[in-house]
Amino acid sequence: MSELASETRTVGPVVRRGETGDDTFSLVITPENAGWGYSSLRVLELPSGGTATFGTGEDEMVVLPLSGSCTVESDGERFEVAGRETVFSRVTDFVYVPRDAQVTVSSAAGGRFALPGARATRRLTARYGPADGVSVELRGAGQASRQVNNFCNPETFDADKLIAVEVLTPAANWSSYPPHKHDEERAGEARLEEVYYFEVAPGPAGEGIAYQRVYTSGPGREIDVCAEVRSGDTVLIPHGWHGPSMAVPGYDLYYLNVMAGPSPERAWLICDDPAHAWIRGTWDEQEIDPRLPLTTTEERSR
Image (tube, rainbow, N blue to C red; front, side):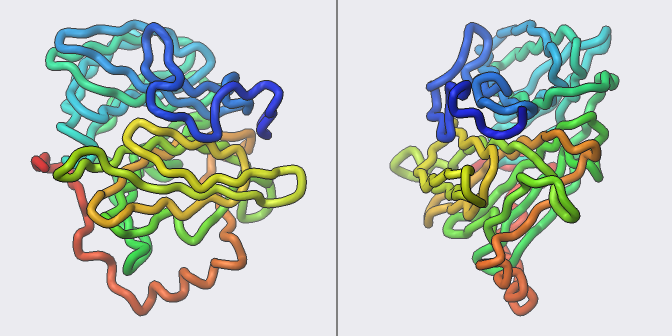
């Protein structure tokens, strides 16, 4: 099953912070509760000195610090992860853990850790991903400028099905633009279910906001989302055009993209909405936003 099945879906398409979780994780998105077949995301919150042990089951996963550092143990290996203060302070290191594994994550000072995952058929080895091995790409131009941290895409890191990247968008810019989709298996496009997980940089008066758009790509695939999102919120995209992701003035935007699907080739192939594809041609005459990159491998306080 790789299309949205409304009769089996129990969460989404917009999942608010704290809306789903269990005894271990504060956020749980699985193929089962999303009503699809492959993509998953969990968020683990540990207090100082906290430890969590869990099985990966059929899913390969990445332990990705959102804040804090941790130790990851899996397959008899032990990995020290330096992590980061926040998603807006640096590019982080991470650990890949395979399907059918027991994993223990512990944190001396506490932290929050995302676990993007995908239903996997092959069992690979547990591995450490150093921060300086993450490919940082500056994409778009002008007010469509954004930063993409390609920590687990097909070109930078080996996995069975999982594709995961981080996107940072400066305040008042639009990303995931022009709107695009990846819900058909054809030349130039792959079928990929996608999770967007959001963090918004706070302002002087507190919590920030952003917006996400998702809309239909054909008959029988009705979806119409234009939602305000805040830190910890998630948007599920089983199909359809998605974008823009809008960073409002005053608040930088971060989102974690998690993608997987039935395509035999692990490839991130997209199709632009033809009504807006012309936007890419305007970037040749514009500079990339000078605020980028927002983060590097060097930690900086905000």
